[in-house]
Length: 388
Image 1 (cartoon, helix red, strand yellow):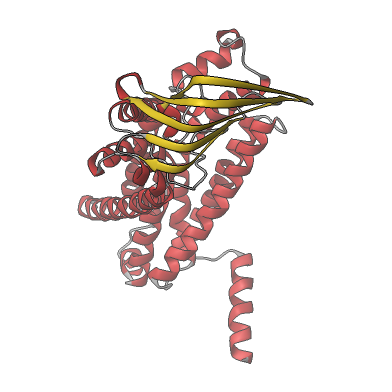
Image 2 (tube, helix red, strand yellow):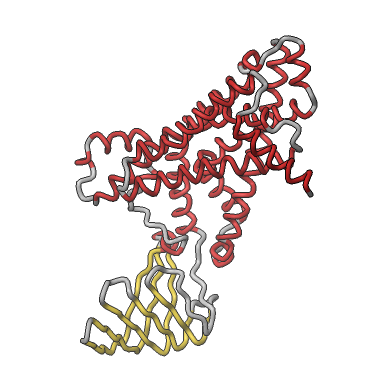
């Protein structure tokens, strides 16, 4: 039995490493493609980009570790079933329950690993991501305008210049519109302007010369002529529009989430929606790690029920079952943040449903019987095939 458990555990670990690598690679490539325009417009090196994505890894790992655990267990037992290894073990007197220590140990290890990410790794990664992002904004970033193109990289600010010399930072026939103040629009027009970048202060200054300022507020319009006028911009906003001073629930360590839930006066100026997000994030950090062991145990009877299924179809099936779980989880998060239901119910509901199915399925799998609903579906499928 020790040899059997060791072999199952090693196969689970190999599949887990492969699955995590593939899922993480797909996510990072997709994220890189999404932000390609940002990186192309800034003077940020390839290794700096990899460094930023490395700090985002804990955030992604919290989401993909449960599905990687489920896929590893499902594909391992599906292969054993397809190769008739389970039948041979059953004939040798080894029941399903005697094979459980290896997957149970594996799922427990994945759960503990996810708890580590949830409690400490996520907050560390987001903190380092913001710190390095701001550092790159200060030391590497540049503000490049294209002639004849409206630039909207800064939130609520639009830039335009008919002629641009990015090397010298000179603009001809420059125009800027600032809508950062609600209900007020400020337009600055000048025949020439100069861009002065100060990376050490994470600041860009645009100096307009001999132009006009048009300020519109409601039905009132004011026009002001000037000889020299400058606008200061925060370089941090040039990179993904990050507000480094904003306190977000998803970036907090678990201990701070718990402290805010116990004493809301720690953040007295926040709205009720912020406290709902804190409450939802708190239960999210608890339920996702438990999802590893629940989905892992859920995958075993599913592999038994669909024995003989090819691995490519098994992969699609397991992905579909996880999609159902994640959809229920996402609905719980949305309803919890909206205040429709308490987050404790919405986020624990998927785990409760899958625990029930796992326990019932494990009982049927050990007896090598199939639930009536599955038998009916298989009969319906093969019945249609025979008629065709």
